[in-house]
Length: 144
Ligand SMILES: [Mn+2]
Picture 1 (cartoon, helix red, strand yellow):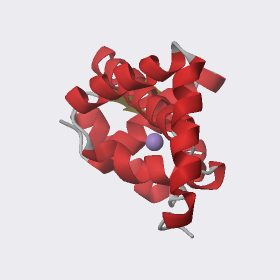
Picture 2: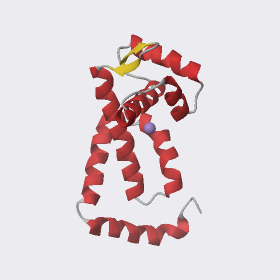
Picture 3: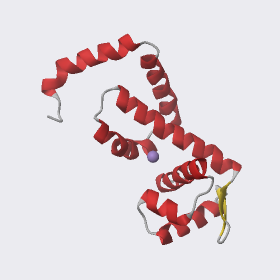
């Protein structure tokens, strides 16, 4: 199992390859706000653990195993953003909150959160009902 930090790298590499067709060390460093030397170190570890193949002058390619986990990690991030947006979390908090929780949930919990998001998406009345509860609770919100 990849560590939380490995997960962040695999997730970013997967997204970069999806968007641009390739992932350079400099792009990964920028996306994760880390020094390029940290990226090189992690990429070597990910290569050793067979998540990707890294050749210094030719760039890096995800293995089948790396692609499979990368796809899941991106899905997990997007699902959690969807959940927080749906339950009315302020836009300014969403990204940081997801980054904070995503590594700490079981895949079982992710699957069930998927059901919950689907439950609300299938009928807009459900979201409306939740909003009504939120209006009633507003005065007691801890963020106030
Ligand atoms: Mn993430």
